[in-house]
Structure formats: C-alpha cells, structure tokens
Image 1 (cartoon, rainbow, N blue to C red):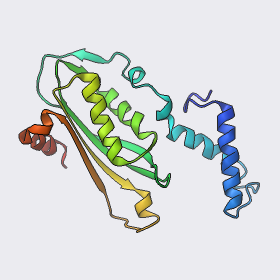
Image 2 (image 1 turned 135 degrees about the horizontal axis):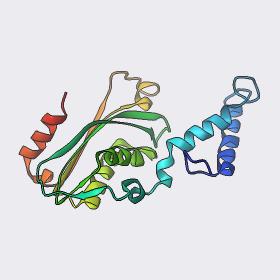
Image 3 (image 1 turned 60 degrees about the vertical axis):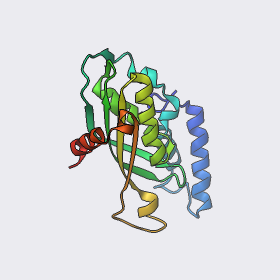
Image 4 (image 1 turned 180 degrees about the vertical axis):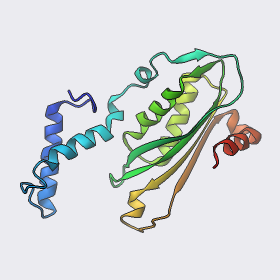
Length: 194
C-alpha cells in the first residue's frame, strides 16, 4: 500500500500501464530515455492527487472538535488547494476561505485545511467542492452557520479551449444563519477580501 495515496502497488502499476498505452497512442515512444519512467511517475501522481477518495473525514478530524461557548465568527482565509477538473482531468487550483459561527463547538484550525484537501483531492468541479465543504462543516460542527468562498484558476480554460489566461472563477456557498443574514455575509466577505 502506498502511504501517500492509499492505493496498492498493484493498482498503481495498472494505472501506469494505461499511461504507457496513452503515451504510445499520442505518437510517442514510452521506452525512450525521458519517458521510460513516466508511466509510473504519472500513476503515482494521479494516485496522490485523488487520495481524497480513500480518506475518511472523521479520521481527518481525529477528535479535534472542542466545546466553545463563544458565538462570534471563526474564519480561516486563503487555504490553498489543488484539484483536478472532472471534465478534462486538468488541474484547477486556488484559495478557499471558510467561516463559521460556532453552535457550541469549534474545530482545530488545521483540520479546516485538511478537510479542504479531502474534497479537493478528487475529480471535481469548483461548485461542488465549495458546497461539500460547507455541508460537511455544518454537519460535523452543528454550527449556527457556515460560509465558504472559493477562488479558482482552471487550466481547462487557460491552456485549452477558450485560452483565457486571466480568468478566475469565484464560488460561494452558505448555510444556516448565513443564508438569511446579509450583515453576516458582508462581515465575512469584508474579512476575506484583500
């Protein structure tokens, strides 16, 4: 079992064999010096970049939810993430800001970053990534409200297709009191805007 990806060596070898076939199909020689080890390297990279499928959010949280009587917003801004677009299997990456209003519990701050990775390390679309993090935090924390803002850059728009180098995509998701309280949404957005 590969400790970084959670996949067996046999599965990684199977993925590598498919990469070798793809290299051959696009007109390259997978046996030439620069490409001889590429199928295995690419298989390990793909396994690592999709490790979120083989993780458990409860193991990531690992009991790091604590009683908290406060009721003010907790925000972690600019959590970087890297993901793969499910439409083209090309990278997209960016920053995510997560805020919540405790409903009697808080979570260790590093766990927020790890939970972002949990969902980002899958074949994904930015809209779903943003929504799932919001939903997971509402569920696990019993928060009064959660708001997530995601800023992403998509290589499927930059290096192929429309080729728009300066494009960025923003997605937001709200739950609980953030759904109904515009003042809280504005407070969150002021805190995370540079």
